[in-house]
Amino acid sequence: MAEEGNFFLRHFILYEFMRNIHLFALSALMAACLAMAGCSSSRLTSQEKALIKQQQAQFVINSITDSHFVIQVDRVTPRRGMSHALSYGYSLAVKGDTIISHLPYFGQAYSLPFNGGVGLNFEAKIDDMRAVRNNKKSFNRIEITTHNPEDTYLYIIEVFDNGKAHIEVRCRRRETITFSGYLDMPLELL
Image (cartoon, rainbow, N blue to C red; front, side, top):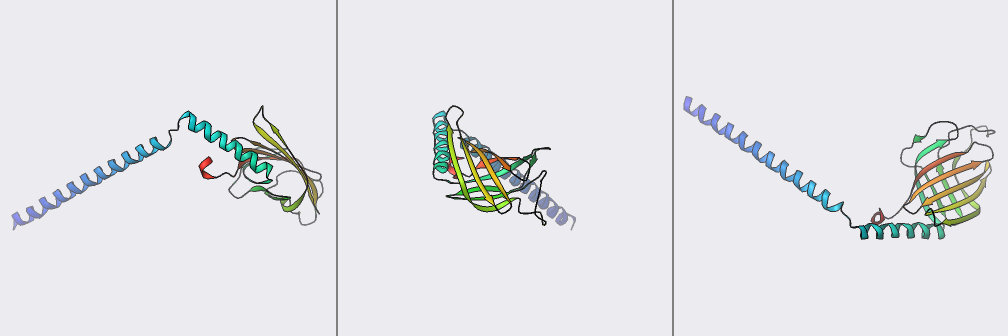
């Protein structure tokens, strides 16, 4: 009877030992695969990097020329105060002759409607739009003037060739505020 108990105990210990070896080997194999996949996908030649930069710059220029672009905003800097990171979902879009502003506002307002107003969260027709390319510094500067029943706005947007963007919003009834983010691009250009 004692031998039978030792038999089961020995087999149980052997089973656990083999299981641990298999788990260790599987973990090592997965780690090696992940390391190899990470190394191979992050290595681009200088020619490939240059081609991607050129395609990004062309995409930025085409988007601005066609007046169809979306800037995802991830940082805000009020005129008075510290810069703040923003959660996902804030954006500025230009669709032809329309601007769609979904931006937060922090700062001093000089006069507002009783309910606080819409701030920088509205859709309106563009009154005037001017775009200028600065080849020396590799960015495009866009000035958009628009209004709604609450205020008149001047959006000064700088979009760099790599897609990074800076937005300054000047209002008549609120302090100036700035945002930073990036132009939406296709995944193959990122």
